[in-house]
Length: 270
Ligand code: SF4
Image (cartoon, rainbow, N blue to C red; front, side, top):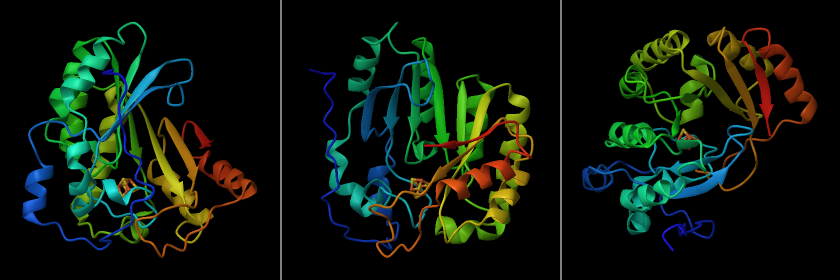
């Protein structure tokens, strides 16, 4: 059945290359004209209580967060091994056409959808079919998000806030120029006046984040609609020697209390 999507769970896959270099040969394969879909979750109510969504997972990311749990869908060298397992767009849209009236949302997320050259047309087609669209992004490529907002193709946006500006590079594992932070702040201002519902979210790791950092991050997005704090969960990580730990419930509650002073709504996402 077309609806039965095979997603190969890669848990047993051993990391071949951790500190990968982007090779042009690899990138030309990954950067193709059509949307790469690694996995589809056919229905969930987690993103929107009371509303049914499906989630489209796209491979590849331009960050290298040490704690990332999916290196096989982030590092080009590893992605190439699975390129023939990607789900064709046509299969996804066949599935979606049979879900009209059943699903409310399509969530386009993980690992960094803005890297997909076909994202705009993909989102447009979903909207034209009558579904609401959510985009998850790490906030690295603002122009495409801006165009999607301007053309009213997004109904909800979730943006990663990885750490304070001072600790950003250490957290995401790649260097950034001042332009990145300027653009990130520009996106924040764009969202504030866009009329689109949005959230920021941070995966909190003991060893990378402190209570003071959470306060600084909440101030950085002062006035934001929603700010979700997510606890780091131990597991397979991009950096196999990652040393980070989870916070306990009391520590998270304290962080929520501090962050709540600066944003419209703050919560701990379980
Ligand atoms: S955690 Fe998210 S932003 Fe970081 S490398 Fe993984 S997919 Fe990219």
